[in-house]
Amino acid sequence: MIHLYRGDPSKRFIDPAAAVRSALAEALVHYYPLAGRLRAEAGRKLVVDCAGQGIVFAEADADIAVDDLGDVRYPPFPRSEKFTYDDHVYRAPPAGVPLSLPAIIDQPLMFVQVTRLKCGGFTVSQQNAHCICDGPGLAQFWKAVGELARGAGTPSVPPVWAREIFNARQPPRPSFAHHEYREPADGRDRFESTPPDAMARVQFSFWPDAIAALRGRLAPGAAWASQLDLVVACVWRSRTAALGYAPGDEVRLRMPVNARGRRADAFGCQIPAGYYSNAFAFVVAHCTAGELCGRGLGYAVELIRDAKARVTYEYMRSAADVMVLEGRPVSARKRTFGVSDVRHARFDEAEFGWGKPVYVGVITDAHRGGATFLMRGKDDRGEDETFIGIYLPGDCTTRYRMEVEALTAAAATAKNMQLHMEEVSSAPLALRARY
Image (cartoon, rainbow, N blue to C red; front, top):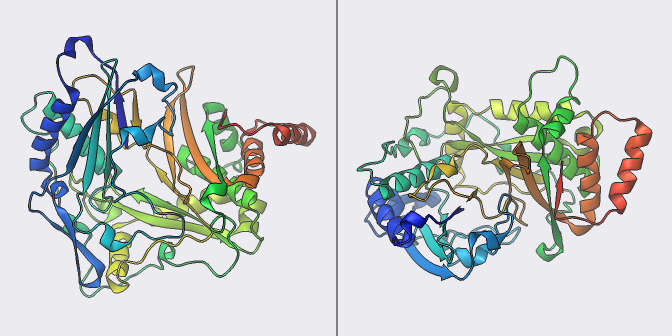
């Protein structure tokens, strides 16, 4: 993740790297597990050795200004490799290669780099161990760092560790199937068999009119669908069609569902305010490629909505039980589209005294291995938009664009739609397509 800030003439004699470093040191007193190290016990169980070993902090200077970076509203963040200190501990491995456990044992749990720009602006980038905290937890930590940098004595939200909330039961007794850890039946997976260097990235921005068009494709009287449901259903369906899976192949959508903010009587547990560890569970929506692409968009929306509704305290305890019984299995990947919604993680609340960040978020919204982030921003007119980028085999991108554009087009006759598709297929592939 990276934060980008503009310079402030009133702070021209203040070193942002020193300010962030000092605030980080204070914040780690409150968030002490982040300054520890991971240790593995029997059954691949991870624990945190909280001995104050510290994090890695680096500072750098760049002979460029904020405006030299161009349009920073959308990831991938330009020249991100220059702004990010990384010794490859937490970098995602190539597709099909699981992250090895020894690689993260006894390693720093966070790497931070502050880069000063010639205009007085600066970036704050970080990589961290996801098994320590999730997006909302990380946003809470960086909000605290910002508060301390601006002179607060303590964080406004007291941090709560309380990882025992989601401990496995004794004895473990899974009560759900947990398809997220079960590979689908045998069959060809075009995505997994494509080398990373043969992948191409495509990003779509969904403006309000595109969202309205997707909503208009639901059956009359259908239950209300969130913007997340509509966009993810559109992308999952279009991606499946573009990859050309056989009609009988099982295809899946995997996504994390945040358990924070749930009513205790409905969820089954009260997650305390200030909890900054992982508070999400993976769910899977699945069907055959023929069903997904042959039925209306509402079918995909219903599958997604039903999958999200499964996340209760019982479901999360069941997942923890599976972790214990199976020695922390890895997530299934074959014919699986993984997407994570980070639109409401509140990363922009990290203010170190230079105002709101110009850009804040993940360095890239898509990885060649398949992980994709759903993000939000403002277009040139100041209107809200949701954008999502994915990687596909290079020869699948045109079909994907056609599918997305067909689903997000306003009402049109079949003839006009066909003409529109022909125009799209002959157009050169752009880095971003916008609505």
